[in-house]
Amino acid sequence: MPAFPVSSYRMKLPSLDFRLLCILIVISHGYGSYVRPPPRSTLSVPLDTKSSSDPQQVHVSLSGSNRMRISWMTSDDTVRSIVKYGTSSGKYTSSSEGEKTNYRYLLYKSANVHHVVIGPLAAGTLYYYTCGGSGPEFSFKTPPAQLPIAFAVAGDLGQTGWTKSTLEHVQQMNYDVLLLPGDLSYADDNQPLWDSFGRLVEPLASSRPWMVTQGNHEVEKIPILVSTPFKAYNARWKMSYQESGSPSNLFYSFEVAGAHILMLGSYTDFGTDSDQYKWLQGDLSRVNRRQTPWLIALIHAPWYNTNTAHQGEGDDMKEAMEQLLHDAKVDIVFAGHVHAYERFTRVFKNQANPCGSVHITIGDGGNREGLASKYEDPKSPLSLFREASFGHGEFVIYNATHAHWTWHRNQDDEAVVSDEVWIHSLPSVSNGC
Image (tube, rainbow, N blue to C red; front, side, top):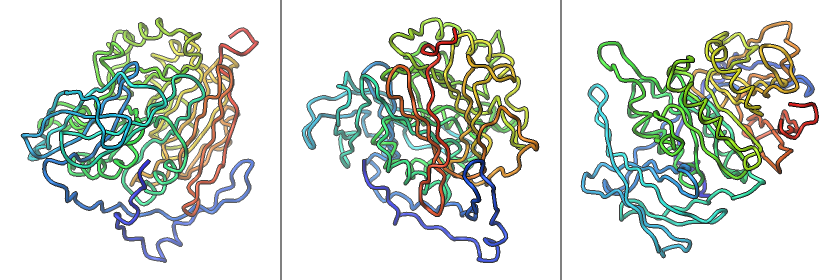
């Protein structure tokens, strides 16, 4: 994986007085006292000085069985949507062509967005590739065909000093796939921030598949002026929705190693008569737990939350879909939106249930809005660990029955394991689930 370009990012730290005022002391359950570091400024990501024909904002994603989608942008209209690739540096034995698009948002016109699916590819293999027929060589490693597999999990990333810290920590882990439960760039209608986000994450996102779903900051709908939501998100971050039989890029699923993963949309229709609900019913009916013993879901707005921020915002979706996920024996549900970390026991319909899903909120990637530091008191017995700190998670599935979850707090630029738990897959437990 390429080195994260620390020196490429400039930021202004708040004044000392302001930083001192922002220091908060948290008593973390089971971990004693912790002094939370101060907030950090939004990054200034330098403009790219590459040629107009060179690939920019490169990222890769899984695209069905044994295939990857390579996405990038160029401002030169003559560049072809072609990827050349092979297993030796500088020797490209295969090539694939794809499509390109662009979009307008108010006065902004995007560069060309290229999407090319390549494969079939060998599992657990390092590939070298070029985009568009020119420019630098990139490389990625395909995930393993069988367990074990390691996922990095980070939500609500944004583009701050804490985002940079989170990405550096993620880069240090030997992960196979990154899962992002919504809120990527925090562009919020300012489209050049999508470009700077693409440059920020390229060192990681070009070398391992990033699988994302949308959050509220991806909607970008303005009454009268911009009637179509998700214009930038859908154009730039095309996921494997067609491969999973979904009619929309806003919800889809994919399989990797021994896991079937649902990427659900909190900000598109989810009622029982919606396209998403009907697709989810069909998708779950096709899951084979012998082939994929782990079933995982990602949403944005959490269904369980003891933070005072965003209370109840996931309730309607939970009311519509929780029974579906419970009947399918979903093992774990990752959410974002709340800018803090929280892990719940297995739960269903607001009660502890040994056959319910483990719910984890991980909306603490580094966003510009800061941390959600206030929690309900007294603490619900359903909530096993909660802390308002930036960080990321690591979910390692070792075999068909056991997986290990760790949450790594960003503490003084070090990734500190602050919560961990072993999780058994629901088909493997002996209580009749």
